[in-house]
Amino acid sequence: MTSPTHDEIREYLHRQMLSSVSHDLKTPLATIIGSLEVMTMLYDKLSEEKRKSLISSALTEAFRLDHFITNILDMAKFEADAVKPRFETARLSQMINDSLARLGPLKTRGEIKIAPSVTNDDLVTDPMLGARAIGLVLHNAFKFGGRKAAVPVIEVEYGIVGSEGFVRIRDHGDGIPPAKQAAVFDKYTRLQKSDQQNASTGLGLTICQYIMRLLDGRIELSNHPEGGAIFTLWYANKKAT
Image (cartoon, rainbow, N blue to C red):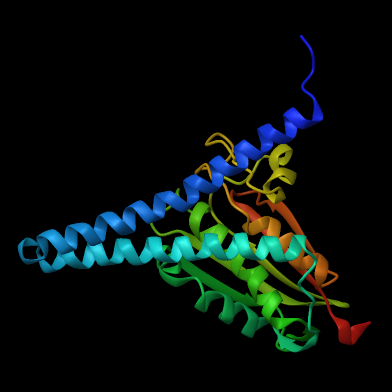
């Protein structure tokens, strides 16, 4: 049996990518259409509770669709080297608040606990890109990292250490096996249910890694001894260099 050629491997990966993208675009769209169709056809027969439920479902899936499309467009910009950071004075606490504000209904799925380790969290970085990176990790944590609890808890710690600022985000899910950790930063990676509580495809963590490199920082992944994954974003503090 001959080994696959480079073109055959590339074609296979291309098909896999299209399959993943199609699924993540069509699934929320189907829910949005279905909810609105039911509302349109049966509005007078639906209870107020059912109407609110259908609207909530449509809105949640609309946010999900917007998130995925935004990631696709951002990925194209990063791969085209079209994103340049703008460094200015920023605060880690404000970046965290900005990222939470953009999560939409997803953040209602759990509880977030924020714990600063310093009183002065000023640093020089790109606050928009920095907040975007935090939001992508939080999105991942809210979506996949708390299925074992009735009310998932996401813990966020932040501070300044030497010439770096950090934001550490811990979820309370199943964690990610060490052998699979590097793969979560690859485009369109799908983890099996045995690797993580929910199988998933996406670009969020790939984009996050791009951002941290642009900011001369890095993202680290580990598992907490008591369960759950820990993502730590390290920001180079430009005023300290």
